[in-house]
Length: 231
Length: 231
Image (cartoon, rainbow over the protein chains, first blue to last red):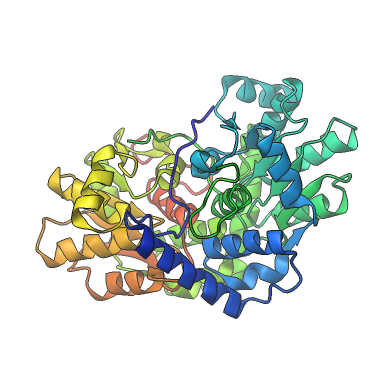
């Protein structure tokens, strides 16, 4: 397990002066809303989309964001009930701001767990895929929030397990990045999520920073002060 | 200090099967080289640019990559001599693959150091800016490789210290992301690096994943096996 830290979010000013920080956020979000057409998003998802664009530094990702309307509600309810967040990579786990989580939710990443390397050798797949198998074997997936920001094979393996009828997670933030397999894995999420709420960014773009921004946005109600939902 | 981990790189398959992993890398890099015009890059920087594009999932960043021709040579020499890597954020530090570094080089991030919060309050700036001041006060910057993947204010503060004539780092990988200040900070790096070698991505785009990909590429000679330079 990689311990989660309270990293500032990607692109954020990490200011000690709250007013200045809020001003910079406000201006950033104003620019994003002026440049990107976000009219198709429900309010709660729009706020998350703004953060994803912020982390990417790129309003052109907006049309490629795909989601179920219930994704924010499902993840919020799960987090309030204490659900863990399962992350495929250490960078994703590190970026999640634990102080913003409503129920001291655990943030887990097992990519460096020696059992994952052994399982990957045994199953003949990638370590990221074996990490999902480890989660499944240990009963961690049911009701959890899954955040995949790196490895297409982790997302593919999760979808295979859903095909097999496992008890599903509360929501899937599935935004791996890359040129081989990433776009396909995210299209597969849209095509066969088996009713599980999801958020993704279609195509090649994505990655841990965008994934982390989405999770952190879902975990807070106030765009500027990042107030915890249960404060 | 955030301990660095051996996270897989953004978008990489993290495979347990080296051949399969190499095949996926090879195909990814082939696509990138087919789609992006990399002819203006020297060979050693071209290899780094490919990795940055890989991490972004976006060949359109290629024209915005700015650098000095000596950046890879300077950072490589410094790392071989044992130089530390100073990271502005935990996500950047976490993504650096320490097993690839040639001299068990320390990877430091002080954003969560309580002294940084106190210093930020005292100086009236951001924590990221105060982190750079802490590095300077402790003599950590001279000869180091600085990797800024998150906070424009960290890059701005580093440039201010260079203006003041401090002993410079070996190289600056300065790729903060965002809508307010990021583009300006990266242009300032190009305009006033005081002869220090640098690598950046002009404009709004960037972030920890692209920064980490650049550092990891600089730290290895073999594109496919990630062989350590001193193996």
